[in-house]
Structures are given as C-alpha cells and as structure tokens.
Figure 1 (cartoon, rainbow, N blue to C red):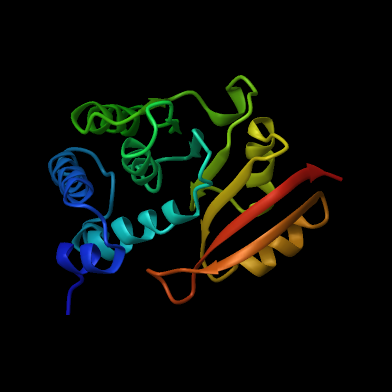
Figure 2 (cartoon, rainbow, N blue to C red):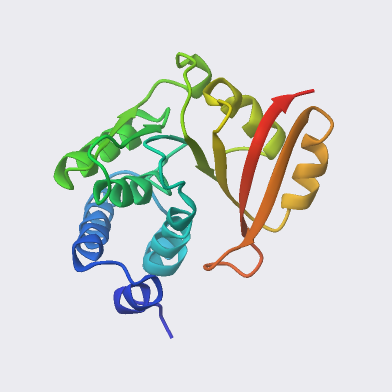
Length: 208
C-alpha cells in the first residue's frame, strides 16, 4: 500500500499550512522533473515517504534557538526545503542556505523558495568555495561519506553547531573511517522512513 499525503500528515502531525507547502513542493517537482532529472520517477512516486517524511524527520531535532542553517548538496531540496518550511513557522530571523552546484537544480530551489515564500536562499557556488562562517545547523543527505562531509562542514562549524546528516546502512563504517581524522560526539537516531537508515547528529566537531 502506498504512503500518502494523509499518512504523512497523520504521522508527523504537521499543520495544514505546512502540509500545503509540501504539496506545492511536490507539484513543482512533478512539473520540473519532466524537463530536468531532479528525482528518479520511481522515487518521485514514493515522494511522501522517501522524500517528504525522510526530510521532515530532522526538523524535530533542530535546536530551539537555532536560526542559521546550511544544507550541503541540496539537490531537489532534501532536506533543505523541509528545513526552510519548518523555519517559516518559527521566528522571522531564521534563514536557510541551500548549497547546490548544479545550476538547473539551483534554479528549481530558487523557484520553490520564491513560491513558498520560504526564509531561505540557494547558491550554485560549491561548498568549498563559500566564505567560512558559523551556522547553528549543518545538514546533508547523500552528499558524501562522513570523513569528506566533515571536511565540507568544518568551515561552517562553531562551538554550538550541530550536524544533522541523513545516512544509510553504511554509517558505522563511515564513522570508523572519520574517527582517524576527526574528534566529535555523535548520536544515531533511527530513521522514520528507512529501516536501514538513521539521522546522524554530530556535536563538537574538530580535526585531530
């Protein structure tokens, strides 16, 4: 049985306004995906579980006082758009930066940001070329193995920054490799959308 918008709303208890934003995001995906390959058709068929729920699940772990977010390798907005939708319902000072080097995908993100009136912006500049500055939350999904991901994330890390990274079943091996070069503490939070996946919450990241 397919996982529907109602299933998503029931499981997450999102507001009607938030659900409407997710539905508009899906409408944009369906339209744009006919022209550019944002998401594989089979994955888009399972949008509500594979993308909406998968992206939404990091939002309950956003620190209460966080207001600056950077999402690396945003692609079609997973999970950056979900972060921005959540930030929209919070304080007016919130801002999400989505980093996506593919120009066409960045154009898609900018369109969704505009039409959903999200507190966000998107850039096609590569993460390693961005000016280092501190963010409260660094997020990513399927962007790079943990060791490389830490390299990308480090320029945006401050004393109280946390990482919220969506990962699959290979995460323990990735963390073991990252241990050789990095000091950090972490928490593995079971995924709501994938029995083999998890959210990796990273704190206190610093190079050895």
